[in-house]
Length: 235
Ligand code: THU
Image (cartoon, rainbow, N blue to C red; front, side, top):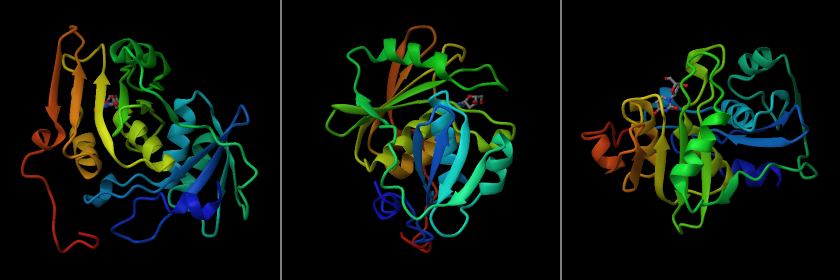
């Protein structure tokens, strides 16, 4: 992996300014992150937020943030949050990156239940898990919710899974499954519906509810009359 190939994976159709970074976890693994913009700008995931939340989802604490040229958005927040260092790095070719992709489990429900144990939920104690399956139905990206001191800086399980996929360069999806054992329904929040609508509008959300019932719904049906405008760049 080098900076250019990582930068190409950023989803920045609105600003046209790709951003990428790399976070080192406290067990010595490296986690890549890219900026993932949304048609509703405030829902944009910064590159550092993506990399730090993914690192935390693997139960590692960020200790160092690497970037190419300019300091990326939110760098200060995340540096302070984990008391980690940040530095420019010309070359990331030699680093060993964690592979975010795994095989789709034969029993999704069982995997979703297991994943709940990985949720990073110091504020809510409300674990959520997600499995995002690629178009070919072979590989997937798992997600759990990640919370930090600023509630608005964490990411929902669905967005952690999606961020991993985008960083990995996968952008065609079959479906996304979600589960939480504490909610009455395992149903994605409005922000996740908006973000999923940007990347997989025609795919299904498979909801494994806490009472062991199941329902599935198209993303597009979960966000009727959604926000868009031809006047936004990239539309
Ligand atoms: N959460 C998700 O992970 N996905 C959703 O769709 C709804 C909310 C998480 C975010 C936060 O960590 C906790 O649930 C309570 O809001």
